[in-house]
Amino acid sequence: MKNVIALTILPAFLFGCEIELIGIPEFPTEEDADETTEETSDEAADEAADETSDETSDETTEETSDETTEETSDETTEETSDETSDEDMDGGPNTMSMRGPTGEGYGFVASGGAHDLAGLSNSYYNVTTGECVEGTGYAFQNFATNTNGGGYGLEITDNFSNLQKQLRSNGFGPGDVTVSFDQLSLGDDVNGEDWGWDGSSEWRVYGNYDNSKVYIEVAGDPMLVGTMSPIYVELDHNDPDSCSDDAIRGISERIYDLAIDPAAPAVNQMVGEAMLDDLQDEGLWMSVDNTNSPIVRTKGEFSASYAAIGTGVMPF
Image 1 (cartoon, rainbow, N blue to C red):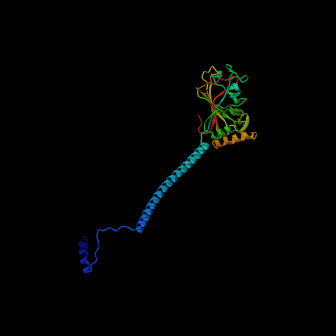
Image 2: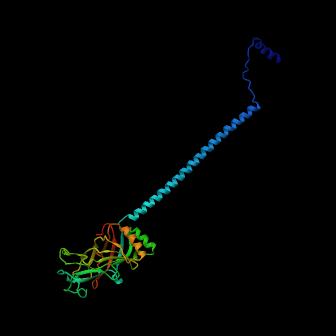
Image 3: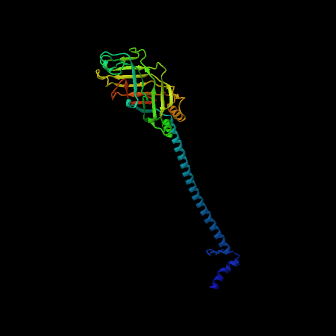
């Protein structure tokens, strides 16, 4: 074998040719191995670093996105809550239902004699005694709220959010709120102006001819005071021979000049300011509606069974 190989190679040397050995692999040296290891290590490190960077970036992005979403959600919730709160504070209408039973010193007291209507004398009253007496009755000339007021609050049925908060904050409730007013009158009692009759029902306008005031109190102490407005009253006399079945409803014109009563204690001033914030510039109306529950009137007194105070659209 040695001779064969030598003979094969010899001609090449003789002709001065260079021989390129093909297919014989070169074995790596230690240096090459180290370089290869370093390159592989570097590549692996780079890949690991890239993966770590990508994962970190993804995690950071997700966390940032989550935090941003949470912050945005919180901010949106807070803003929405604030806006809703503001809407509640400023919105309307405002309504508080009330009642005024005469047995508890509430309701209304009528007095004085005015016009009468043929065939309806039994639905009117004796001027002196205030009782129903056949053939001697008249319409009452005047009326005002009873000793303890026209009525006290039952519940706040619409809004009055500022008033509600201040009432609660100071240990009060709607039942601590009372409304009363001074005497109103039929004035000159002129048919067609101060009263009217259409053959089935009667209407009257009790006006303020004496600078009468309206008072809103809390827990028996002054809170707000203003000038009482006229009240429009409708009466259905039902049985003309009875003065104890008359159905009555009435509503006042809006009262625009309510203000803190100078005699109001500090706590009632705060509650009063809250109520004025609810009223804004709308004016306060008062109503009583007993059309579905006839009022039994004794000696000029009648109850305020379905009464209310409020703003916005009037109930009738």
